[in-house]
Image 1 (tube, rainbow, N blue to C red):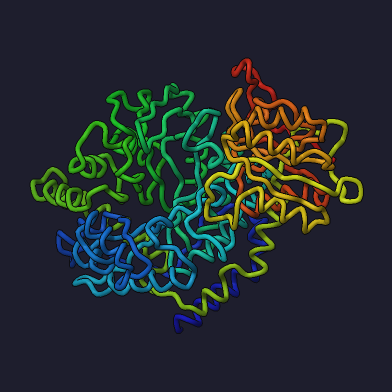
Image 2: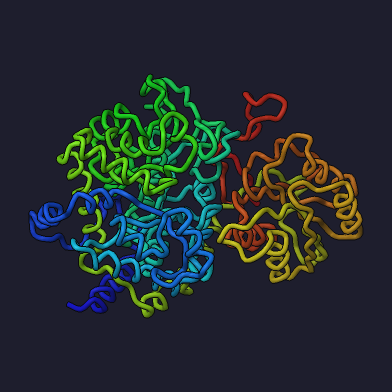
Length: 603
């Protein structure tokens, strides 16, 4: 059967069974036809030691093309990696995978991504021992997206948590997974399995499905199934749980103070559910967890955590991938040559994005040559990685086509599915005097002001502009005025002046500080006498720090799909169906709850 025929068959089957699959009970994810027993072991046996060591690494590389990137990207590659192109990276280090980033210029548009993926696979299959590469990315949706428009973008995890639907989570995985596969990406570092119980968490927050372990577990398993049904390796992260931290592991090392019993109750359930659902991979966390390992090594380097708990207690048999090894949380204790060695000794299989690949690669080579890491231990990881590549069809179908891209990416049914999922996520927290929904017959003239943070890939413009355009399309006359995330007194005064005479003002906030500039903006707008509709476009905790609003909603992100859904809720085109997946604490007493998990108003 030809490559084109097999892909058409796969897509037709997926389309024909979509409705049934969404409602089906969770079962182990499907796998493509396996090679004959022993075939992968024979590949491992043929590989040289440098090829085996390279197979462990998943590396960044700059450029939109595997062989002809822009000169600036060639310069960046030479400076950071010592190669000019992705093809040279594969030839020199025999890396087993590559991770795509927007900032590395890997993800300009779907056809370019597909061509880059094909070029990388050609390089992998040109090695002395031909092995396809596992191309990965962080496509969490919501605030973390590497592949933007015209690909289909869904609401992020916390928005899905507000919707509470396992069917929607599975739909996201199935649709987004089909699009990733069409452009040559076969592993997604998603879903996030962290239970976000700390409102001050600086790195997880809305990337988590919420603060209820059972709810998070259900959605993690559903989304993982969706991805793997589409032929994408899903990855639960960040083990053993990053949801109760106040330090960003990119810049420091967080410490989790939970007891072992608390970990079992709070952090473990989503990972247990992911493993029971047959997830392909688990990503480690660069966190210290003294109750699980008193050595204070980060979990990424902890044998008691990765081997003792994840492998032996939870029974995970898939691929363990480290979080990025350039993050400070894993570099504080040991040098860059030792970190990958210690990660392997702890039980990891894939070593993600070290800051200096030469140092890391040579460090592992030396450890194997000296016997610190046995050849048998090395082969265990290589075999797990090859088995994953085989499950995801890379040995049989490593390449993609432009026809696939056109047939699958950003199609009308996919975009409609994303809009429908988003329509079930917006949460209404306050509605004094039944101000909402607004009607263009009675409150036509609207001003949209507020925060316009840096845009993730799921946006086509500043949030105020996207909201104004969406409301205008719903029959209002809406004008946008950006005041930023730290409005000056002059910007606040201008917003108040622009609000006078309007029928209502919509103000978007982004991570409000108590008594900060955004809070002062909302209070000043409220004092103007114009009805104020507040929309928290990231963390739903903003409402606790505000006064002056008449109605308040949470969208959990500022991507277009979520902002359009919020506009439809404001206009009464759809009801506010979202319910808080986290508790909102009181400003004056953070130990007390202002709005509990499950709270949300209806029309």
